[in-house]
Image (cartoon, rainbow, N blue to C red; front, side, top):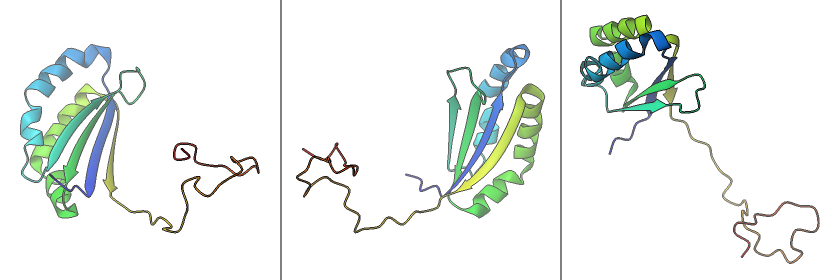
Length: 129
């Protein structure tokens, strides 16, 4: 399984007038785009609530160099140019995985509490059984 530390998202809306052309492009030409050797994984998400952005393409890369090779390729440039002709509100973002250090001494359970939380302090009721 790919351990993707770099995620490239392209979000956009497909106007009604371009839906058929977009679907044709998506079912045909997009395969060449996403099969670039640097792409580790590709996913498509659709917003079923009718909100913007309507569609999200997610490309995953193991290294920043893999993303750069993809983003600088003619294949990517051609695909983005075609996509821009079909969609509106296109936005692209590169995300790099980061970590958050959690305090190992933080007590996340209600064990040891005998007052049922009546002192006004919050308790974790999920683990209080």
